[in-house]
Image (tube, rainbow, N blue to C red; front, side):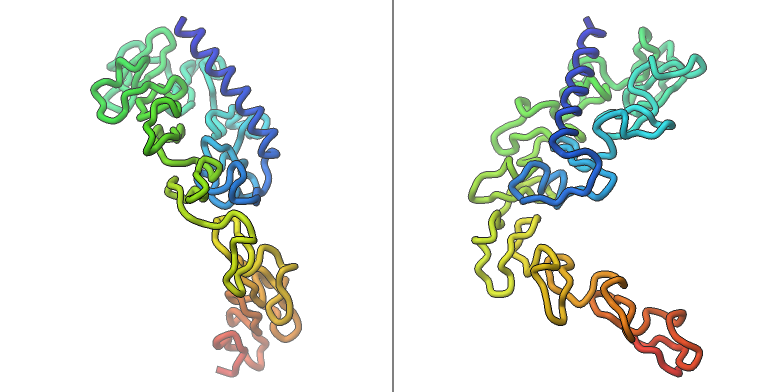
Length: 288
């Protein structure tokens, strides 16, 4: 029965990962409306290139094994790992410990696991673990549930184990929180902040009425621009929601080819200056 439950859970996680991969579009840059799945909360303002938005675990390096390198070929809870189970391990180190998903020598007793966060030996699998069931977590304050994937005691494993004040389970660290993504938040406080609490903020451009800040940014704040097409004149580039002169050297040219902060300058350091004026002084090449 114990093996069947683990198999069922693994199957469910694999299916969930496939759905998430389709919804998030694979490993790519994410930047979408603040009320959309994955924005705010665990995914902040979107994930950088190479990370995928998982609405449970946040910006992760994988949702499927195919995204992982040969050295860590298995995707476990959004992280590329050496193993997902004992079947991935060699005979010399046949036990995949669930807490770190690395192959170890098989334990034969609790003494082999030592004094650590995983002091119990599951002699059937040879794996050191903190718990095999919720009964092993009763003495750990605030963490009464045994996570069947990591076999660590957690504060929650599902939303049903959380209360009204913090109704969402942040599975990656086993804590109950107010929100994971902005879609979890009510109309009055529609933005899920980085502290995983709902807060006030805009969700549409129409809510931004302050002159010079007419666009609703991905973090729920009214900003001057969302893209460089919203800018012009001497500040043609959108950087951090503000129209600026430059955000990178590629935005500059002529006698001021370097971007320092948000301003095009003649130099950023002495190496950028010619022999006749070798010193870079506040963005200008000078004699000294």
